[in-house]
Length: 149
Image 1 (cartoon, one colour):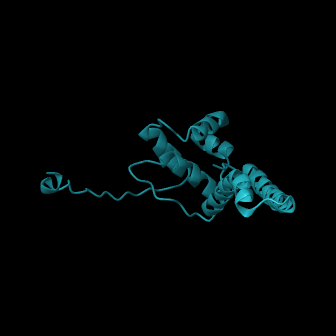
Image 2 (image 1 turned 30 degrees about the horizontal axis):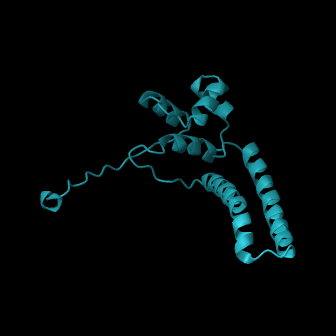
Image 3 (image 1 turned 60 degrees about the vertical axis):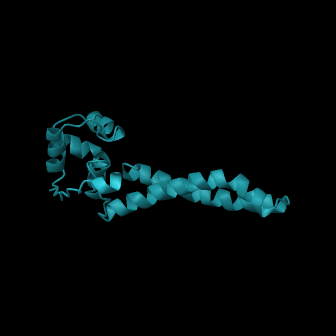
């Protein structure tokens, strides 16, 4: 996950380099006389990395537009906190200042995707980000006993 503008710029640069490298490599393989299926076998791992990097860049750009993924039963909550900071255009340093902690604490929290964060701490982060979170609770019906038999 891209956490800040510096990482975003670096990722965009790497993506452009990878795109150019893929095009050139594919052309050289064709010139060497490899068949399409052979080229695909050679290029697939490189394209997989390229697509992953592109998805990270696209994801960061969605966050800057304030488009968030839904979370389910708090899975992805840590990523949501990071995403909210990014969407607000706030640096880790600024969030740390607002929370009264050292910047390294925020860096560590984000690196661990806020794993094990207390509810109290999560609420403080949301408040520091000027975010109000609302929930929707859905109680699922238990499976029908007849269907289990």
